[in-house]
Image (cartoon, rainbow, N blue to C red):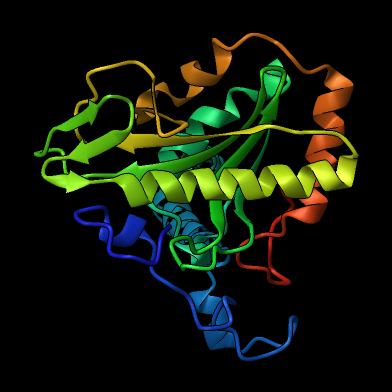
Length: 273
């Protein structure tokens, strides 16, 4: 997320930058894509693959058994593939190239919907003057226990993670001060923007979910940022006391959705979760 070098993180948090405008590489207005562009569209390709596989199944089934059996098996195969991909998929469009860490956190957050939590992914906030932050919150979570800005990180598992007096975080020999300051800055910006929209204070807790190395604690607050192992993201939110009503959650969510735009706005953007 940060512009500065992130030591041995997943190639600066695992994201390949899009074009300088932040838009996907489509040169034509919506609805005027060429056949070549449609074939490259990640939303179209799975259906082409399904159609080819279904045709092959129908042909083989017709030769071995009958057309009806071949057609039935083909339909069942397509349905099974749709279900499988939907479970593995992400609500963040494929061209955004979200990192593996972000997708893992997103998968955990889905199960919180039944508990009254709402989530926005890849939301933009103002950058800081020094360029430490690229102005992106990976996951903004609004729920009964409060509002959280979660950043997902994939670090080298070979290097240990340790803290010093709750003021310093190290990954091997690397001081992660800038990473924590970045997360705190972005949460503070989100807090101010949302509060201005709803008319009351909305604290946003910054946190970093780390994948890769072993984390020798459940949740540790370092420089006002909660740090924990990535697979604890769901539990981190669930174990907090309830401080917001259902109406508060919905009001804050609507304000955040309207005032914190997607980091990579596009006409192809899917509706917010």
